[in-house]
Image 1: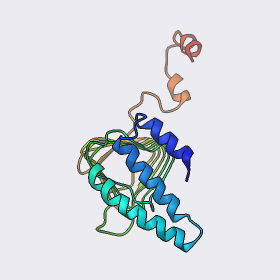
Image 2 (image 1 turned 45 degrees about the vertical axis):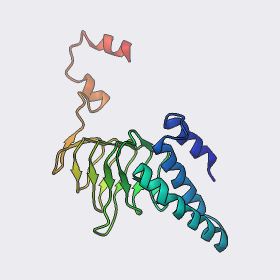
Image 3 (image 1 turned 30 degrees about the vertical axis):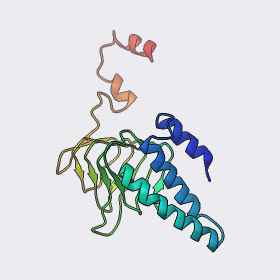
Image 4 (image 1 turned 90 degrees about the horizontal axis):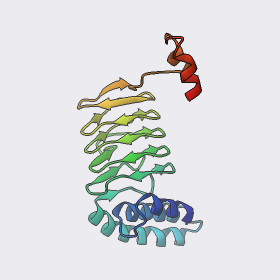
Length: 191
């Protein structure tokens, strides 16, 4: 079993063995470990014990992360106060931060979302369908996302509206273009 991943989950979720987010991720890691066993009897035993544990853990924590999900490192359940449901075929990149009452994927149709790196999903949001969410995307609370989202965007509303990232400068060259010549030495000194 990947104890380094479990240790990282433990540290990330408040260093508490009773934290619902940590317990759910530990169960997910156990399910992944069981699916990778080399022999059929070992897989069967791990599968049955995982199923029994999942009945209790999923009903108590309201967090369902099936072992088929591909999770990147740094997955963080920010608030484990409500439900979290992830489609078994979902692919999640590195450092996803997810709030409570979030649904990723649906059991009503084909396909599941592919979520990039450094994404945040707000409270009561849904990401549905065979869509791709780019890197560094922020999905606001109460947002229903059903279309592809490019990198570096903010997604708001239901239905979702996609806005380019709200930063003052797109590139370092654009940041310096058009500035007063008096400010350039100050900016370069601060950089």
